Image (cartoon, rainbow, N blue to C red; front, side, top):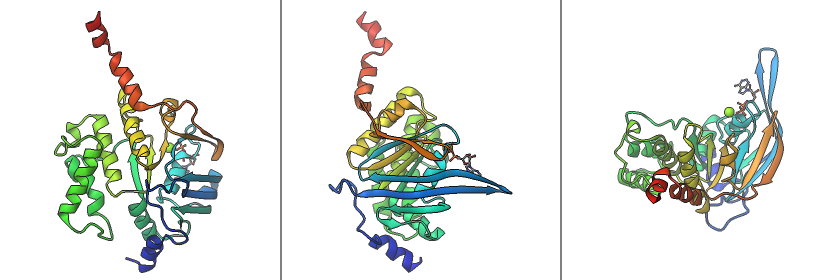
Length: 281
Ligand code: ADP
Ligand code: MG
């Protein structure tokens, strides 16, 4: 690989990268200023983002909200180093991202980011364990050379999301909630600085949604910084801060008041299941 890219990433350019959960709370994981995205379609220009400023500190858990077309996915693609802004600056963990080449972006993604999608995006004919191991195998720098280490890391990630007993199952043998937990394990296995999730509960029923949010809250409590795109206010109530977009602009940015605890909500749901009420009657 390109030695310059490697040095840029390893040295953190301006300031040392802050490992998560090390008490470096307050360090900026994301810093964007004046980020604009213009899509040119023939003679038409679509302004998807209109000068976004956003700072995300280590340990935050943020919901990105807004109606369809407000720019949520465009913003996530830029923050996820999948797309470049037309204008504006982006620093990720102290590293300047705007202006990087495709290869540099790919390495940065692998080092710093974990992704969770609405549709899980698991390989169908592959076990949970093999799905989780993939990001380690595909690491372009070969950071995890030894197969036993990779296997152990994948197993630990699946145990962390409560699927230690299901490692050999294929996606079709798992429920939607379990598949999403495999996807979360896959996102965590490289120990990312930042977890980005685009509508992670969009395909899940309400009970499973709360279970996934309980896992996210647990991971956030352990120090993982996360951004979650959602259009569900119930999901946003489990985060710590809500950033609302409209027409490519931030129109609201505020802490969550009366934040809900997903583990407590699950407990309450279990206490009031109809079968138990019937049993009591
Ligand atoms: P959201 O995720 O909030 O629904 P998007 O970020 O997908 O919003 O889209 C924001 C705006 O940018 C919309 O007007 C959309 O039509 C436009 N847009 C998104 N992606 C493209 C693209 N690849 N080419 C042209 N226009 C796009
Ligand atoms: Mg979208």
